[in-house]
Length: 186
View 1: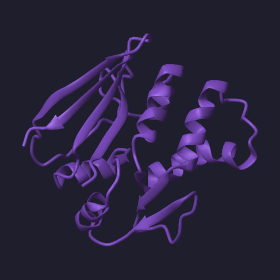
View 2: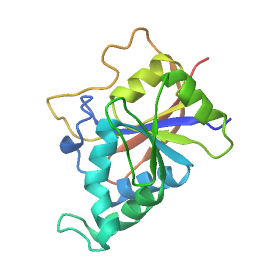
View 3: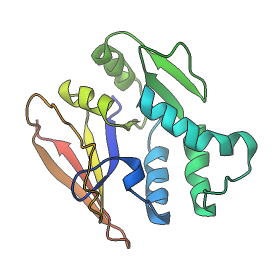
View 4: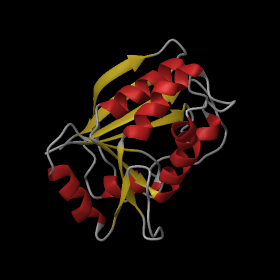
């Protein structure tokens, strides 16, 4: 059974708005390594559309947009090549090496986890909340940025019951960011 891992950048005050965070070269390298350790990515519609809008144009043209630093290219190539599953009840179709996940979320994700492989990586906010409620996330990674955003959104708002976690690894970056990995206490 392949594990389902969740990874997200957050600020010290818990904000997970991607616009409040400025990942550097180390963060992009770490994110590309996380992607490479998974057989597929699992996104909700909002995260899929956000990632597609940001990273797919480079893959289509090979021309780096003005905002993209050269050190972002490995991440862009890795996310472009990755298999993607998109959980959505509103999208009729997806492309970008993706397929829609329909029906009961728990059943669908359990089926994906039963497939052989290195693992699945989930991102976003709403979908991970639903997966946490179902007890389907095997590892949580919070890349805590040394910044106070002063606003939200925050993670796991509305979680019906606490989930106890145990620290399994910690990685510090030169920027002061810290990647903290946790596994649920079962």
